Length: 134
Image (tube, rainbow, N blue to C red):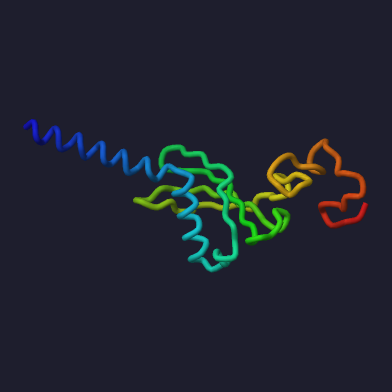
């Protein structure tokens, strides 16, 4: 009887441990890369992929992911918002929505405040972010 109880406890601990390994930014990034690569929409070898944020809740996760050409500027990239569901040892995309990369960039092209998208004005002489001259 003791052996069965110990065996059941060990199995429960192993299952929880394996599940926690899936609740990481790296696991989400890996599975998004696989899924997007399988679809053939984007050539993953030519892109830098960054999980900007991920929030786990139960067997679901919400992630904001940036895609940028390797060696390119952040303004050439895009963000996607993904809702994922854990199925076995994989995060599966169940919903996706285009984000706004420009809302996450500063004048230097790095993540930060968004000049022109808030109360902060663009620097003098800076071209319009929407491509229309002002």
